[in-house]
Image 1: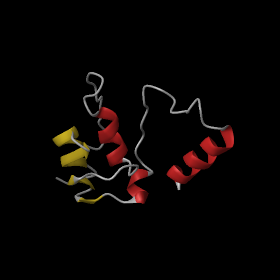
Image 2: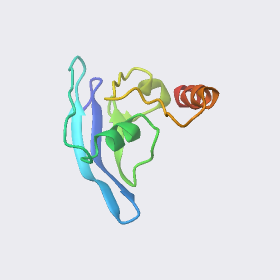
Image 3: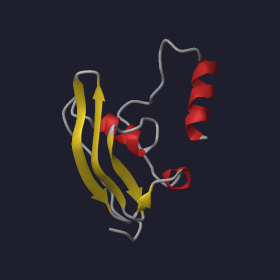
Length: 104
């Protein structure tokens, strides 16, 4: 698959004995508006964090335009999580530094 397609190909992620993702695969083509829904604990956030480079997958690959995804490609992906992503127990400056580091 090519032509500006985001491919999630067989990604898996474990946290100790807990399997968060087990071979998740899907693709999003250029121009598509893609909704990713599921129950709590289904792996949506983990999948998005891997796609955005915040987490590393234990197995599988994320590709964009047929190639392993790069930081440049990730800057063209919009992601709107359910919550704002602010951490109530983290100081404001620490949050700003953390979010700036994620953004690069």
